[in-house]
Image (tube, rainbow, N blue to C red; front, side, top):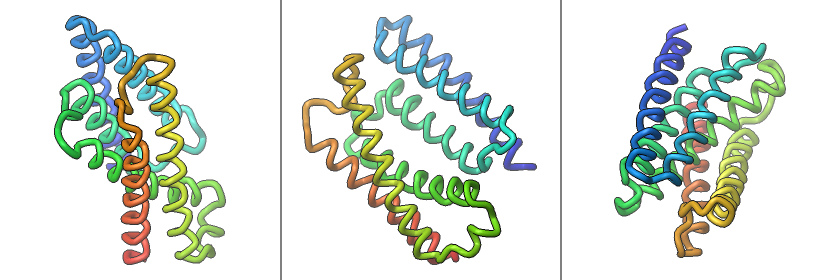
Length: 185
C-alpha cells in the first residue's frame, strides 16, 4: 500500500513540475521544448490513467521509477539544461537500461503469471532483461531520429556516434540490472 501512495505522490509532484516547466518554456519562447513538455504531460496522464483504470495495474515501484526518470530526463535534462553537462546523457541511458531490465522482469511475470514465472530459470530472466533493455534502447533511438527529422527536435545532435553510445549505455544498464537480479536471486 505504501508503494502505491508513493506512486500517487510522485505522479502529482512530477506532473505539477512538468506543467510549470512547460509553461516556462513557452513563456521564454522555447516552443519546441514546450511542445516536448506537452508530450511529457500527456505521457504522464496515460500512465496514471492506466494505473487507475486497469484491472492489472503495473508494479508501483516500476511506475514510481518511471516518474522519477521522466522528471530527471525532461525536467532536469531538457528544461534545466543538464544535457549540456558532459556524460549526463550517458547517465540517463545507463539508468534507463537498469529501469528497462527491471521492467522486463515485471512485465514478463505479469504476462505469464506468478506461478509459471517462478518456474522460469533465473538465467533466462536475466537474458530477457538484457535483450529487452537493448531492444528498447534501439526503439528509443529510432524515436529520437524521427523526432529530430519530423518535429525538428535536437535529441541526436549532429553526431551519429551518439546513437551507438546511447544503445551501448542501455545495454550496460540492462546488464547491471540482470547481474543484480542474479545476485539477489
